[in-house]
Length: 342
Image (cartoon, rainbow, N blue to C red; front, side, top):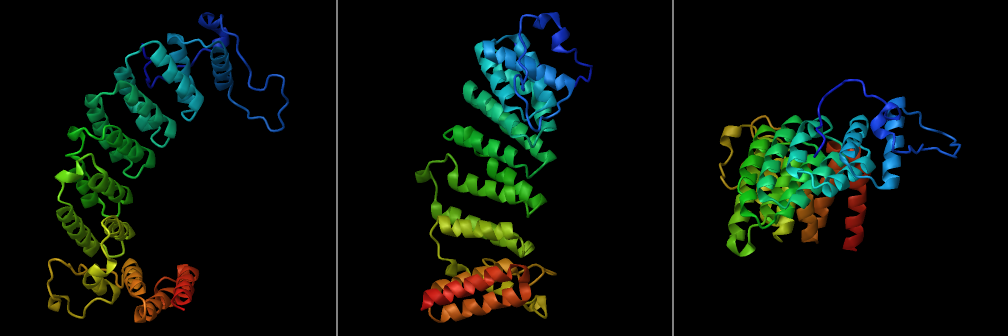
């Protein structure tokens, strides 16, 4: 059976004083060694890890080992050896792995930023090979991301689930609406933008069942609308570049959309021409948009000839006025472009 990850704060009896562990010979970390800079662990942690090394040496896998590994992990959730040995013991004992997932939910949220927590769940899910459990895990990840919407390990785990069960149609339909909710809440959520790209272009949906041109039109329209709300949001501009690169669409095809973002706000916004395919910056937007200037310069550079001169003028404005913190970078772009044009 699996040991529960409870929140008990009762004082733990040392294993050296517990008759249940009398058959285990503890191994000290520094036995026969005189380290120059030893780590001074607490007595409780030192005692537990001494006995852990003892059971690893003998290869014991038993219910009490699950209790020991839980104890160590609670004191040090990044102890990868304890996690790995716990998993091996669960498998050896034919423990209920679904119960292990459920029992450690609160623990995973408590130590959200610890990689080993999510790796353990990945091993369990891989062993279970259950789509129903995968659906349950997606729901769990959704809850945990409410705690930290940009936690790398959580997002990585979610994408691993989708990739591992790539051909399971049940897992994919809710992803796009869900990520749109996240971007509605925070348009600058770079993790959500990254996940959108993963879902749209790397989903398990068969390619011959997708109208690629329609998807491209949809993604361009969605991204343009989000850029209009926050023109200096680098995440949206990066997504736009990713869509164009992935579909081999020339950046120059978006010149009409980009140009209004590279100048100051119009004197009278109400007089601006309404173009549903190329939404203008929202009222009060901070202009010019730095990502838009860079994007337009890349368009001009790709044109070559006179386009190089136009790109150089933009890079100079970035270096000297709009983005001086990256002055050296823009000067490098200028030097590189002029050298290539020779």
